[in-house]
Image (tube, rainbow, N blue to C red; front, top):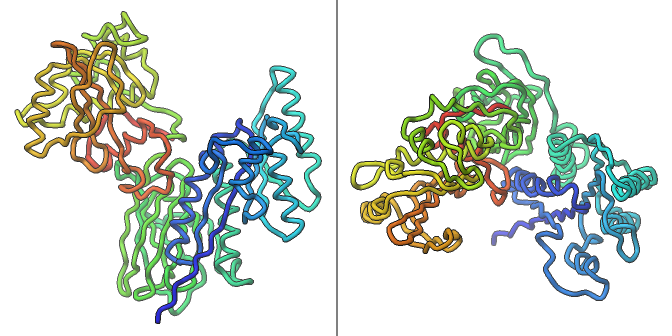
Length: 497
């Protein structure tokens, strides 16, 4: 009779004031990444608990903090992550803030039973208080830091990129102590400095040679345009059948030859590629017993790391878009601006979204043979995630006719709010699995308004096998990466980390 494997749950709880919400919101993607790494081993799963997702509106004899405590169960967690920057938080019954109260619960539990592990981070980013209240809050943070328990070690960071890297590394170190026998962690993990590429190939060994490790992997790490990414990447190798885990740091501007890997039937690896400017991506690969195994990993750019977007000049826009901009003088919040003035008044996110949707709509065919964009007359509102436009009623008819030809499918438009005086007339989506264009129509007599947006679906997470949390909001820069990589649609602008 086969035995069921017992999966250990590693409970992680986060405590912090609201000024580090961005740090809190990045934790689900890091946890998801770690689970994709350890999942194939079938022995451990990491679960994140935080009040935003695990508490609910209710009453408690000890107030809101008592309700949160009953949901987070900090005394029973395995890891407590605390974060402070400039705010200490709101006082509760037995502490100067909810975060301090939660830390005290974790600290007292640790003193009694040596768990949870307590990871506490202080943001060292420059800050200048502008009021007495802000000065008092910051002063309490500094006091807490000065009086941190002598048994503990807190960790500084400056900004989000460093926070993500630190938390990922520290959680990985804790997980390794769980899945590797004592004494093997240091032996089984390691970081190698990049070796200079002699020509177009860079050869890297995973660690000391082993007669059972003769496999070779030819790896290309590229961006959505198929070009090798610049800068360092860290490549994690986790074998699914034998105990072999290693990390290589290397420049990825050329093809890499990775040697000293186990081969089939023990050649199943989970490979994870991390870069400071791109989203982490994971792949399963089976290293062949003879020859070289080829693997190409496409990294989508991390929209939070985009430092510059180069957009085309107005005169170089596609002529249909140029004409529509020249005909649009009533765009919400930009009334009176037309053509080049309107285009130049858009911020980067709205401009990127307009170019994304234009590029998609210009090549999306209708059953009549023309395209969606040919029916767009003028723009009425431009947002970072959708475009409202005045269109011909004929577009609605042609899309309805195109459903029977399997070009579109009807979907619910209930979440789309009609403009004043208009009524919902239908919503349709292209049948792409990634980067689908959704059109929602509103009618008032002969007037037709269409709400256009590109629904990423699970594109970032599934097409790229990116390890970012798929519930996080999408930037138009994310959509750009999906369009270029999956649909060979170039919106006409470039992103730079």
